[in-house]
Length: 229
Length: 136
Image 1 (cartoon, helix red, strand yellow):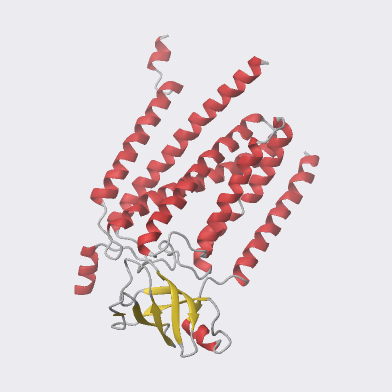
Image 2 (image 1 turned 30 degrees about the vertical axis):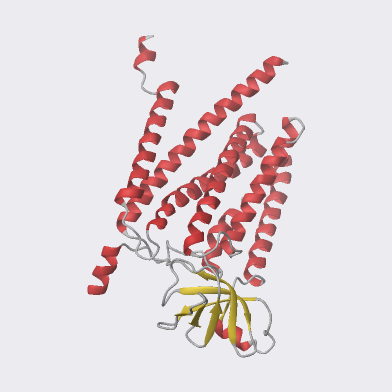
């Protein structure tokens, strides 16, 4: 009893710690977005949506990478936990990618002058969104776990191919999406970079938090279903 | 394990094939916009065709008309073209911005745009940094 009380790494404590750390980083990131990061000289205050836009697309990238790796593991090991991980991660990734598209649209309207245009990066992002929408549809269809999980895993592995294409497309193709980072990019102000890094870390933790909670719910559902029979 | 390999190896090959097809398709066929030079090379075939063209807004060329329509000159370093536009103007549209216009070129070599877009900067700067850079 005493050991359990003092053990700092019990599940409950970990969960609490992760929750508060995520909350603190998200608050700090939001504060930095509005009060610490300088106002961009050309685009003005609307550019501040950049931090949220990058945060969501980064976490979506992590989520879909988890789906990819978990799907490979599922095909090799065929244990249910990898299938659960892939599915839960895909759901959260889909939510994050949708937010990315919405925030991008809100940003594009005043700056570019349109909500949407078929530029290579936007087109490949749209394809990515459709691919994972199909994946989630595949999952929601009828049928037992075995076959469905296997087909979904294969689909997820193939769909993942589009993810690097999204990132490369703006560099190798003519488009309207800016290349800001890396070779050929314009770069950002140091204070903007610090803000971005805090936001990215916050979103990474938020993803982990959501993923753990989603898996917990999924396992409860499975347990209930099994007991009900 | 051997059965699984039989399953995974073709899968990986299929994934690579699809990625190559997507990559090659994106690389070769689809061009989001043409340059002013490429547009003028296609004259007269391009008259009346709907195209998307990009170029830099020439300094001092923007004229706002009384009926709120807009005229400006767009250049790509080699060639330039006059553009006429009547519609919503992006917030960051000004001298020196890279613009993207959708519309068609008329026989008097004026580009009549139905849509005007502005490319955002690839360098995100603060006021302070720009001031220091211009001063130094």
